[in-house]
Length: 180
Image (cartoon, rainbow, N blue to C red; front, side):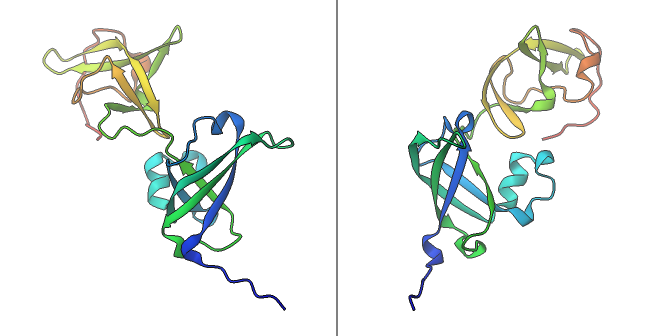
């Protein structure tokens, strides 16, 4: 009778991503693997939550150039390089792949963005005058809970994340809480 030996230090995770999600995936990108039993409410999780819950980490090893006919998906293989002992052969997992990373980017939570006529804006607090300024911004990389601001806000400026729909340019405000 044949024996199957599994070396957990050589785990690979096979993922099928819908074509529209898999288009930006390339070899060498970081991937976080979360055991499905650790996901309680996936829709309410932020990128930070997913990274903290990650059972293992890996690197995208291969991206199939073809699309599966039935599922319309792209097959991706992730080689696990950290936390393989937390995974079980055949277990179902969720993955989060960092298709773009910019560690020193100026970012704001999604709640800060306001779209007017399909143009993104944020309200920036002018602390000297005690008012808000509505600014058109140029958005960049989109994460799970935040988005990069390429132009329109300087690092360190405060943006409004609550009550922005009741504001107009020049509205007097008082800073109650600063959320990092």
